[in-house]
Image (cartoon, rainbow, N blue to C red):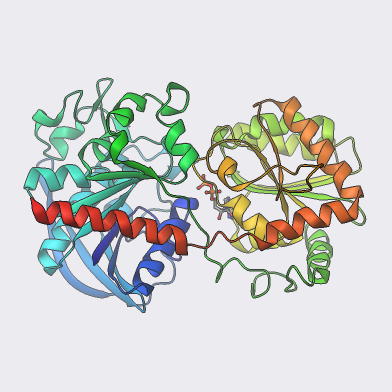
Length: 476
Ligand code: ADP
């Protein structure tokens, strides 16, 4: 099968969140399964792990009244070919999507250009592609352009987060030369705007999202963020496939970024990680449970109820470390907690992959009280590193974390249902109590470390859909 993955980020090249982990890992997994795989990415100024990519060809895309030129760069890897779209005006910036002040104002134009350029690259390079796997709003126009050009390429559109919709003013239609016949309620019109996400939902051959529970939730008014009706209309084409994690990257027994390797049969190394991280960040955690968190600091992640709950919980003899960046107001709330509870909590406001690894390895508990969570990778990584997850029962968190049951002694974490600081606070108190009972705590920890959330099963589910899509397109 010839598969193209289109994404705005993928590890190890560019990452702001879980989308990058998923697309970058799937690229490798599909390749290892024997498929011919292409990964299409913008060539950002901040791109990593690229070694003198070969300039394969040039393209020119009409944007407004200008012909915008770009280069197609190619880097071959053992699992497939990475194809970068180079256009310095659009992608030669300090960040992927925007600055602290907000999104780049021309994001519609930047990613509209990217979507057109991907199809241009396929044409110019003469690539045979059976299925394009397009991801999130940044590549949401690809299915529309395929339809408009009458290309024989099937698409799977994966929604990693319905909260980010790429809705822009109508003027973008003319800038990208999109025929107004598509600007309807059945098309990409969304409350008077142009929605890149809706384009992906409406014009793709199949749709998926990243957990079975989230696939159901997005078809309800509460989590559908205005798209629930259109998703219900395509329910027979919508599947939920759970994300996995890449255990060659996230594995405490081989991880080179942590202080000491360990496994579920030898947890001594985990205690070294706790000691060393404590020294590094200046937190005295001896004989105290360490509650960690690594997250984008966005409303979705439940940081509002967390800040409230911690305001009470930090009165206990516990330690907290939070690594994240995001909304200023949330960053400030965490910094004030650090000033109020000196020596008990560290709020590390930055994006730092090495530190993230160290926090997973050092923490006794990992907090993810999300308001909603399409799948979540943090809790899967935490399981593997023996940091017992504390999660809210929503989306992928519900599909992967079983609340510990004190009668049957089953469960791989702790969870709560109601989205409130009180429910979270009570769960944190319960976690603290469990930590004092070492056999019980270690049992939950070991069960978690034995869970298998590798990509194998999920990758096969993707392949089944790709086969269906290919068959459908061939029959057309
Ligand atoms: P989302 O994709 O919604 O941000 P996920 O849980 O699916 O959330 O994935 C988040 C990924 O990004 C995880 O691999 C997590 O470790 C990583 N991450 C989030 N914030 C940071 C940060 N500040 N520094 C390093 N890694 C981070």
